[in-house]
Amino acid sequence: MIHFDSDYTAGAHPEVLGRLVATNAEHTAGYGNDPYTAHAKALIREAIGSADAEVMFLVGGTQTNATAIDGLLSRWEGVLAAESGHIAVHEAGAIEASGHKVLTLPHYAGKVKAEDVEHYIAEFYADETYPHMVAPGMLYISQPTEYGTIYSRHELEALSEVCHRRNIPLYIDGARLGYALAAEGADFTLGDIARLADVFYIGGTKLGTLFGEALVCTNRALLPNLFPLVKQHGALLAKGRLLGVQFEAMFSDGLYERIGREAVKHAIRLREAFRSAGYEVVIESPTNQQFIRLPNDTIDRLRQEVSFDYWGPRGEKESIVRLVTGWATTEEDVDRCIAVLNGK
Image 1: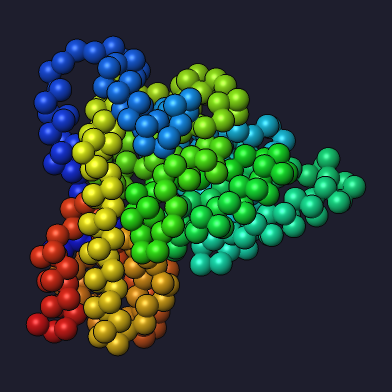
Image 2 (image 1 turned 90 degrees about the vertical axis):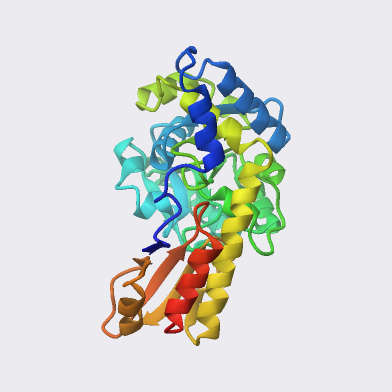
């Protein structure tokens, strides 16, 4: 079976796994107080061009979002997000469980617009009863979005400007950030992300680590007590070295960038093969997620050899599917999928 279900169905990239094996028998201090974690943090600070940034490693994306958002918001505040955003749809109310409401905005292929953020905040404070309501305390976006689309540098700058003018932090969910950086037409860098966001995270789980996300705070004043906050959320890994070793590998020898580029290359090739075969590309995603509308009989035929997910419920005659590439995707996988698609 060829897998295009997601980018975290396989284990770890061999270079990451090799580092874990090589250091396995060593004894180091716990909770991230080890030389591997210190080096990984230094590598990330160098990569983003911010020597003063705080870096903290957590295990998973939902855990990272819930911890960071809870720390950034006051008790009476909520988080602005696209109505399609991960925290609004696919995190089982994790943000609400910490006492903060997700305040949804319209989305455009997964993205929010700066003018909608401005309008929401302006309308909120124009209402004289606003002290009775949940205040918009921050903005959450993901790069790339749930639809595989990316914000341009201009769009990120516009969002950052309105957030800072309105005195709320901009937080970027970077679960698949490596694929956004490698996307077709991407005009931003990791340094731009660090410059424009107050807090963001660099995803590892979906980019080739066994697990792990690197939370980066470029404005330390927003999360002054990050260590105890992480521990309160049950997110502090005793064997913190396991996170440090993996991110040390990811940010050595260009591995993070290489994984992103290869996966996006495979995804674009898949997209164009489906398009050439006459099928509708539902969303023009330049990243490693591709969304295709297929007849149900074609889906059933493909799924005999190729594994992928529906994007929404199965329709009566046709359905939208999502195919996702990752570090483990090979040229042979793509070749075979295209051959099955073309009935070979």
